[in-house]
Length: 205
Image 1 (tube, rainbow, N blue to C red):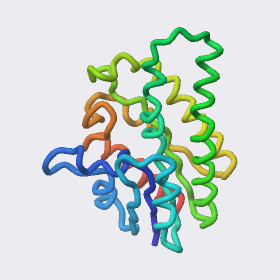
Image 2: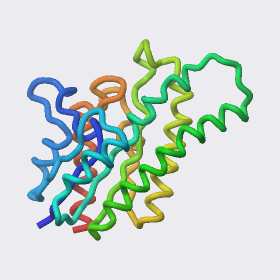
Image 3: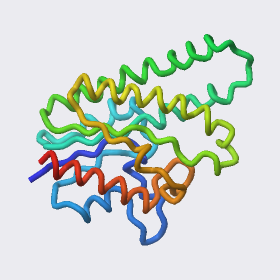
Image 4: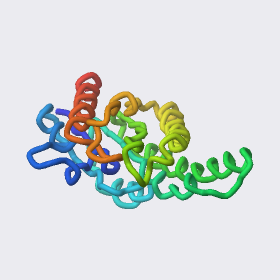
């Protein structure tokens, strides 16, 4: 029987964001599979939190690992996108690379630890969100896509190093109804996400 660990943030742990009688990502997955699901993900967690608070909760045996993390790391640096100082293009990119460097190191550390169990690994990219409909975030809706792309480059490059698979969330969360708010999965989006995870479990079992 498959034993599946779900690590990350509210992209998985989204229960408080869905409506009454609606299901979270994990609950959708429970309804789709007979596999043992260990949901370790915690709303609000960052790559630091995964290293210090989630990896030590992994069971000794698993067949599948799903990681969806990084969005909150970007949110912690949101002031970079809202900065009104006049910077050269070179300075902007240098600052962006500087922001992403420690995130990359932590992300690779996480996946390296997961790879020690010799289980199947699925790394989820970060989606772009529904920022245009939020009065506090609409002004960075376009610029944030660049940061998301930089983070997703980390996901893809890390996947290549550790022979992991990648699930492209930008191809799943494509409509406003996929979001419960500008940045969290809805019942509908969570259902689509869970279906993709279940398909991967079945194909890699």
